[in-house]
Image (tube, rainbow, N blue to C red):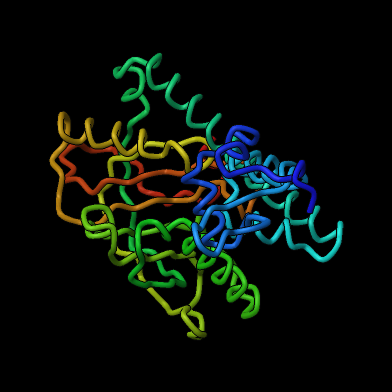
Length: 290
């Protein structure tokens, strides 16, 4: 190699804005190997034509691409494969930006919405024993949303296969352990007018009657903790809570529309009801609760 094409690691560090520590790490993991390593001193030397590769790595790291994915991009067998890998990472970044924007919007709304206005939407209703098809499992909190979506799809498919009509809005029952210990029992159910044959994870269930303080969360799952907080504050101040798992009713969800802004989830907190004249029907769908 030409002497003019060689840079010591210090000079290569300045040329690429990568620290010597980072360059040594990339050498150890095989991501960016020096062109030459002195067998006696261990000094690393790089060629000037390695500068563009280092610049590419630095920009990918600036976009939070994992090192293994960068390696896959650099060693891709063809342009099509390389572009596919980059495109997949850019899509993940875009999804992350959407989540960040939603979190920002939710925080702004939280700061601007008075507590009294938030609690104004809290109500009460009685629910009767409800025959349903259900899936019950112990799940981790971080997996609960994905698990719920899969379970609900399985319930709809099972009822459709058995020609069993859906009798109301789908719902979920979540144990205290799921919130308190990040792992606990969860049930997703779909009301149906007649018993179904158990298939796989799907079984018959009678969802027990309950008195519920309720609040509606509009939109995607992100931010649903605000509705939980509103409901908990109301119950603590104005009701007598009883032991029992939290419930959710998916009045409008993924099965009805892919537009997440249209989703509506009712959260139910078990309470001891002393007033009369409470509503006593289970939500049947979006048209009955709008």
